[in-house]
Image 1 (tube, rainbow, N blue to C red):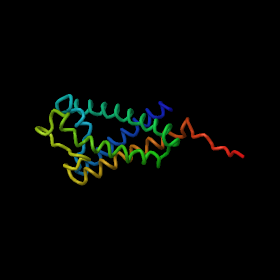
Image 2: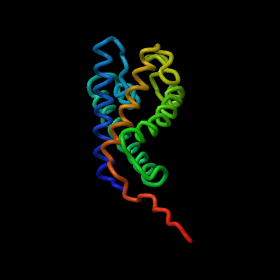
Image 3: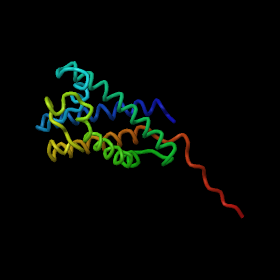
Length: 159
């Protein structure tokens, strides 16, 4: 497994997600995963956002390592399309996790709104941005990972 490639791809994918969320906020879609993560351990503000950003980068690397394991052990290939396939599974799991956030976040629902599964409580545009961010992450990780180390062995014909 190419740990360094997966690590780098996870960082680039995580930063891309953060930039997409920032663009969304500029368009009125207030998706701010970094603030949601950061306020799990800190009061709202720039420090919470930075903590949340660090948490998001760590999660991005960990998830990219899971993708890399899948590339090597399950699909025996990587690439943009394979990464998108993994991202479909990723978005389903992440979407379900969003539904249980109120159970683990100390500020939800009293001080922050509960996002709901797939951010559905926030509106259709939030759901769309949530899905797009995760698909972009998967495409980036798949494309940056490159050829797998443990390629599937070639079949040999027997007489």
